[in-house]
Image (cartoon, rainbow over all chains, first blue to last red; front, side, top):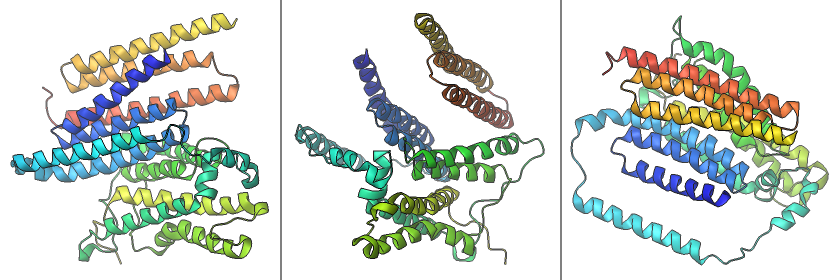
Length: 312
Length: 97
């Protein structure tokens, strides 16, 4: 019964993937990609990896899907005017390259040693030392904290890349156009109802990360979504990107992360090393500003480059 | 007792799955945007409600049950909003085919 479910799920994943690749319309392909992410999240649940499933659903499908919807809306103008299709040789070579990459990946997966070397037992044995009950969070925030730190820095770099797309006279202005709430708007009503609940859920997902599936990235995605919803409903406006508090909010997470990391030299003798007695406290000190920074970065990624001239 | 609870779960979840199926058929077969929306929202809301009802017989505590009901209520809210927005967009974009 479980095997039948797995087989159906795999066929569904392959089917949605094929449909997404072969879709003619960009928007249809994006919808396929979002669906693909949700089915993939289901597969992670089946593999007993709820942390990965949450991240896939929130970031892989939700946030990336939102970014791609925005991109496809911008591409629509170019699509309707240009009728040209890529030449047959270009399509052929793209197909050959993709086939080689897929074959290489498949070969690597098949060549993996039957029993992979693992540090999981050591992680499980030392969980109590860090004061966290969720091994995934322990790996992300303690054993491989440097990876998490670099991920956050990469997010900031991406945001810098998006902002740099703004033309000179709009530099420092607000991203996106001002959304005005209509008097009979559905969206403002829902935003007023949903945003408080969503903020609570986001904080809950972040907080529960120390003992159960969840954590700062998943919680931050929900918080970012709530900010975007409130903006789309016209309840709040995106701040100008030159605002000092906004810049501080964006870098707060990585700044605190770096500060605690370097303090690790003095406290425990290595970068990002936590002294045993304060491990959980230090991780919380990093995680709280980190969650806020990630939430702000993700929301501004979706908002896009500045499109309105600065007011002052 | 647990046999009865399991039976109730199976009946409710199957009924929920039936509504999902009916909603999908409606989405694929109905002629215009508004009727497709009608099929989707009615079926999904009721379908998910029945699935949640079925799962309620299996949860251990009050807190878990409240979480399930919360998920259903949030989905109801989101589905109702999105269908309103889609329907308005469909009406604004002219007479449907």
